Length: 143
Ligand SMILES: [Zn+2]
Image (cartoon, rainbow, N blue to C red; front, side, top):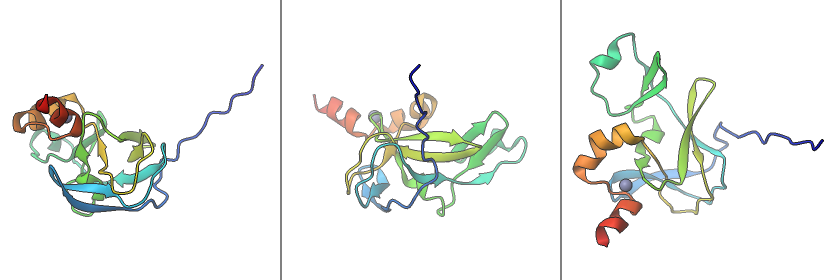
């Protein structure tokens, strides 16, 4: 039998540099050096909501970790909040041991804007009404 080793993902960010800059959709987070595929770039952090708070809070930075745990990443100290949505993203978000990590899903070049897919519900509610500013949708609207 062939031995196959499961390649473990590196969730915790190991120090790839990024910076906040102006982008097509307001501020965005950009790679400040080349970032390889499959590494943690930044953790999405926030205050944990109290029970029932998810029904009244209006933050657009909520992240549901489990059905019972949601965090609000609205604080500016949560650098990951600057990552914009894209329908053709170069990052993805994964929950690992109750924490939220943004990982590269392909090789990313220095200067590229980081993005991940916010998910269908968020897109329909908040992004579609304003018009999605991601590369994929802008290309489509040019045709
Ligand atoms: Zn789009």
